[in-house]
Length: 286
Image (cartoon, rainbow, N blue to C red; front, top):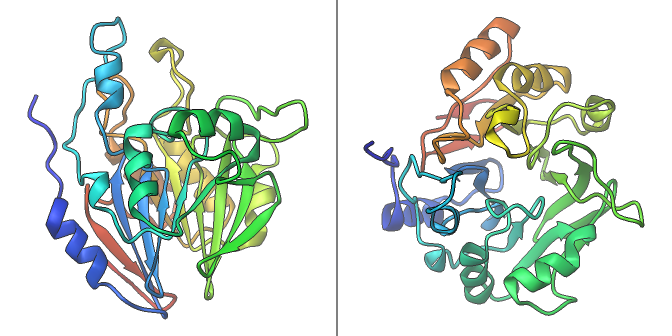
């Protein structure tokens, strides 16, 4: 199968990121799977990047091959403008050493946001000092580079906590200027999620759509209809889907998400790989 081609990649994408500068609006690019880069006021926040072939290599000769559907959008070693990078949980497509090690090396002063519960695992995987990652838990916040980042629980497939009650799977609310963006990490719907998110008056919700199918033998996520339902329930101004079009065995047709959003009256945008969206309160530029 021919790989899905990015709208822009490598130097062209990097130039697009570098050239955008505004403190009245922000721009967000989809980098594949659950990875997004957000830029506002000359600062860049990178959500859950997976920019390697580590999983395809790992599972190549197994009964669960991770056959890639889309091209890599950018070499992580070229991303030298990152102020903040997140990992929402320990699965490799959200905590990839081949992606994170060069990013952490090439961005002086970068802050690495993780669930506090995962500190020991994260330190071992990316080979960093134990005190380097910034750990959050449900309801705790930190301000970094002008972004106020708050941890919220995710269920993948349950809201799993360690012995101290700290969440192992998380999403992040990022507030900056008069904006609020929610990156879910990986999650299914669970009791209380709407009530947790609604007070943040989310402008953009970044939600997975690949669904929860036991035959895949991996933890599941929202399906297209559930993503639309959650976006509507929390009053998100715009919903952008993620977690599809990377691995053949674990994907979903975004047209199903579009149909669900139209049916439920939810504002949405399906980004092409490598594409960016400029968002401001008054209007949005695609």
